[in-house]
Image 1: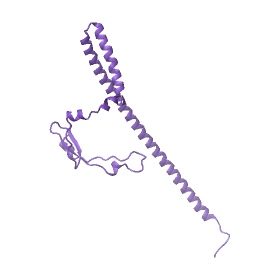
Image 2 (image 1 turned 90 degrees about the vertical axis):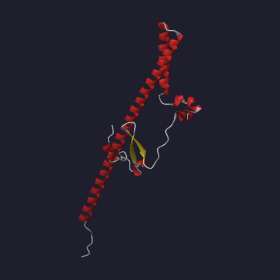
Image 3 (image 1 turned 135 degrees about the vertical axis):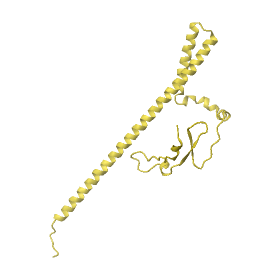
Image 4 (image 1 turned 135 degrees about the horizontal axis):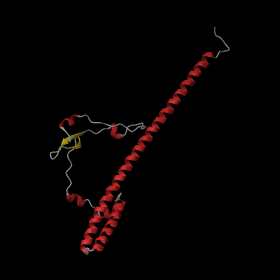
Length: 185
Protein backbone atom coordinates (compact mmCIF):
# COMPACT_ATOMS: atom_id res chain seq x y z
CA UNK A 1 0.00 0.00 0.00
CA UNK A 2 2.31 2.73 1.23
CA UNK A 3 5.57 3.31 -0.56
CA UNK A 4 8.82 4.85 0.61
CA UNK A 5 8.28 8.02 -1.45
CA UNK A 6 5.07 8.75 0.47
CA UNK A 7 7.09 9.42 3.62
CA UNK A 8 8.37 12.67 2.11
CA UNK A 9 4.92 14.15 1.49
CA UNK A 10 4.14 17.23 3.63
CA UNK A 11 1.67 16.92 6.46
CA UNK A 12 -1.76 18.39 5.80
CA UNK A 13 -3.23 20.66 8.47
CA UNK A 14 -6.91 21.45 8.12
CA UNK A 15 -8.32 24.82 9.10
CA UNK A 16 -11.48 25.62 11.04
CA UNK A 17 -14.91 24.93 9.54
CA UNK A 18 -16.60 27.75 7.65
CA UNK A 19 -18.11 30.45 9.82
CA UNK A 20 -15.83 29.92 12.80
CA UNK A 21 -14.07 33.09 13.86
CA UNK A 22 -11.22 31.68 15.93
CA UNK A 23 -9.33 28.51 15.02
CA UNK A 24 -9.70 25.58 17.38
CA UNK A 25 -6.90 24.42 19.68
CA UNK A 26 -5.81 21.62 17.35
CA UNK A 27 -5.24 24.16 14.56
CA UNK A 28 -3.43 26.71 16.74
CA UNK A 29 -1.19 23.98 18.20
CA UNK A 30 -0.88 21.30 15.52
CA UNK A 31 0.68 18.02 16.52
CA UNK A 32 3.29 16.67 14.13
CA UNK A 33 3.26 12.94 13.47
CA UNK A 34 5.99 10.67 12.18
CA UNK A 35 5.28 7.51 10.23
CA UNK A 36 7.14 4.31 10.96
CA UNK A 37 7.00 1.31 8.62
CA UNK A 38 5.57 -1.81 10.15
CA UNK A 39 7.88 -4.80 9.71
CA UNK A 40 4.98 -7.25 9.20
CA UNK A 41 3.29 -5.42 6.34
CA UNK A 42 3.68 -2.47 4.05
CA UNK A 43 1.35 -0.25 6.07
CA UNK A 44 2.70 2.45 8.36
CA UNK A 45 1.90 3.06 11.97
CA UNK A 46 1.56 6.67 13.06
CA UNK A 47 2.59 8.08 16.41
CA UNK A 48 3.14 11.61 17.70
CA UNK A 49 6.73 12.78 17.65
CA UNK A 50 8.57 12.78 20.93
CA UNK A 51 6.46 9.99 22.44
CA UNK A 52 7.52 6.42 23.13
CA UNK A 53 5.54 3.47 21.84
CA UNK A 54 2.94 2.48 24.45
CA UNK A 55 3.12 -1.15 25.55
CA UNK A 56 0.86 -3.47 23.58
CA UNK A 57 -2.19 -4.52 25.62
CA UNK A 58 -2.43 -8.20 26.44
CA UNK A 59 -5.45 -10.45 26.91
CA UNK A 60 -4.81 -10.30 30.66
CA UNK A 61 -5.04 -6.48 30.52
CA UNK A 62 -8.30 -6.77 28.60
CA UNK A 63 -9.80 -9.15 31.12
CA UNK A 64 -8.66 -6.98 34.05
CA UNK A 65 -10.30 -3.93 32.45
CA UNK A 66 -13.76 -5.57 32.67
CA UNK A 67 -15.70 -4.29 35.67
CA UNK A 68 -18.91 -5.74 37.13
CA UNK A 69 -20.73 -2.51 36.20
CA UNK A 70 -20.04 -3.27 32.54
CA UNK A 71 -22.52 -6.15 32.66
CA UNK A 72 -25.20 -3.98 34.24
CA UNK A 73 -24.79 -1.19 31.67
CA UNK A 74 -24.90 -3.23 28.46
CA UNK A 75 -28.24 -1.64 27.56
CA UNK A 76 -26.52 1.77 27.44
CA UNK A 77 -24.12 0.73 24.67
CA UNK A 78 -25.34 2.01 21.29
CA UNK A 79 -26.79 -0.77 19.12
CA UNK A 80 -26.40 -3.43 21.86
CA UNK A 81 -30.11 -3.67 22.56
CA UNK A 82 -31.03 -4.02 18.89
CA UNK A 83 -28.31 -6.62 18.33
CA UNK A 84 -29.28 -8.69 21.35
CA UNK A 85 -33.01 -8.57 20.59
CA UNK A 86 -32.42 -9.61 16.98
CA UNK A 87 -30.10 -12.39 18.14
CA UNK A 88 -32.64 -13.66 20.65
CA UNK A 89 -35.37 -13.71 18.02
CA UNK A 90 -33.16 -15.41 15.43
CA UNK A 91 -31.93 -17.97 17.97
CA UNK A 92 -35.43 -18.81 19.16
CA UNK A 93 -36.78 -19.12 15.62
CA UNK A 94 -33.91 -21.26 14.30
CA UNK A 95 -33.75 -23.42 17.46
CA UNK A 96 -37.47 -24.15 17.43
CA UNK A 97 -37.41 -24.70 13.67
CA UNK A 98 -34.55 -27.18 13.98
CA UNK A 99 -36.34 -29.00 16.82
CA UNK A 100 -39.64 -29.22 14.92
CA UNK A 101 -37.88 -30.48 11.79
CA UNK A 102 -36.58 -33.43 13.77
CA UNK A 103 -33.39 -32.39 15.50
CA UNK A 104 -32.48 -33.40 19.01
CA UNK A 105 -32.52 -30.87 21.84
CA UNK A 106 -28.69 -30.49 22.00
CA UNK A 107 -28.48 -29.99 18.23
CA UNK A 108 -31.37 -27.53 18.30
CA UNK A 109 -29.66 -25.64 21.13
CA UNK A 110 -26.41 -25.46 19.16
CA UNK A 111 -28.28 -24.14 16.14
CA UNK A 112 -30.13 -21.63 18.31
CA UNK A 113 -26.88 -20.36 19.84
CA UNK A 114 -25.26 -20.08 16.41
CA UNK A 115 -28.24 -18.15 15.07
CA UNK A 116 -28.21 -15.90 18.16
CA UNK A 117 -24.51 -15.19 17.73
CA UNK A 118 -24.66 -14.54 13.96
CA UNK A 119 -27.91 -12.54 14.18
CA UNK A 120 -26.53 -10.37 16.99
CA UNK A 121 -23.31 -9.61 15.10
CA UNK A 122 -25.09 -8.84 11.83
CA UNK A 123 -27.60 -6.52 13.53
CA UNK A 124 -24.83 -4.87 15.58
CA UNK A 125 -22.77 -4.13 12.47
CA UNK A 126 -25.80 -2.94 10.52
CA UNK A 127 -26.80 -0.58 13.34
CA UNK A 128 -23.23 0.75 13.68
CA UNK A 129 -23.09 1.38 9.93
CA UNK A 130 -26.41 3.23 10.05
CA UNK A 131 -25.18 5.35 12.97
CA UNK A 132 -21.96 6.17 11.13
CA UNK A 133 -23.94 7.19 8.04
CA UNK A 134 -26.24 9.36 10.15
CA UNK A 135 -23.23 10.95 11.86
CA UNK A 136 -21.67 11.77 8.48
CA UNK A 137 -24.98 13.20 7.22
CA UNK A 138 -25.35 15.39 10.32
CA UNK A 139 -21.74 16.56 9.98
CA UNK A 140 -22.41 17.47 6.35
CA UNK A 141 -25.60 19.33 7.31
CA UNK A 142 -23.75 21.24 10.03
CA UNK A 143 -20.99 22.10 7.55
CA UNK A 144 -23.50 23.36 4.98
CA UNK A 145 -25.41 25.34 7.61
CA UNK A 146 -22.18 26.92 8.88
CA UNK A 147 -21.23 27.81 5.33
CA UNK A 148 -24.65 29.36 4.65
CA UNK A 149 -24.52 31.24 7.93
CA UNK A 150 -21.06 32.58 7.07
CA UNK A 151 -22.32 33.62 3.62
CA UNK A 152 -25.32 35.40 5.18
CA UNK A 153 -23.02 37.21 7.62
CA UNK A 154 -20.73 38.23 4.77
CA UNK A 155 -23.69 39.48 2.72
CA UNK A 156 -25.09 41.40 5.70
CA UNK A 157 -21.67 42.91 6.39
CA UNK A 158 -21.27 43.86 2.71
CA UNK A 159 -24.74 45.44 2.69
CA UNK A 160 -23.94 47.35 5.89
CA UNK A 161 -20.62 48.60 4.50
CA UNK A 162 -22.31 49.60 1.25
CA UNK A 163 -25.01 51.46 3.16
CA UNK A 164 -22.41 53.24 5.29
CA UNK A 165 -20.43 54.19 2.18
CA UNK A 166 -23.55 55.58 0.51
CA UNK A 167 -24.43 57.52 3.66
CA UNK A 168 -20.89 58.92 3.90
CA UNK A 169 -20.99 59.86 0.21
CA UNK A 170 -24.38 61.51 0.67
CA UNK A 171 -23.13 63.39 3.74
CA UNK A 172 -20.07 64.59 1.78
CA UNK A 173 -22.26 65.80 -1.09
CA UNK A 174 -24.63 67.51 1.33
CA UNK A 175 -21.74 69.23 3.13
CA UNK A 176 -20.32 70.56 -0.16
CA UNK A 177 -23.64 71.79 -1.53
CA UNK A 178 -24.83 73.31 1.72
CA UNK A 179 -24.24 77.04 1.71
CA UNK A 180 -23.45 78.77 4.90
CA UNK A 181 -25.28 82.04 5.76
CA UNK A 182 -21.99 83.69 6.62
CA UNK A 183 -18.75 84.30 4.75
CA UNK A 184 -15.35 84.91 6.19
CA UNK A 185 -13.98 86.50 2.96
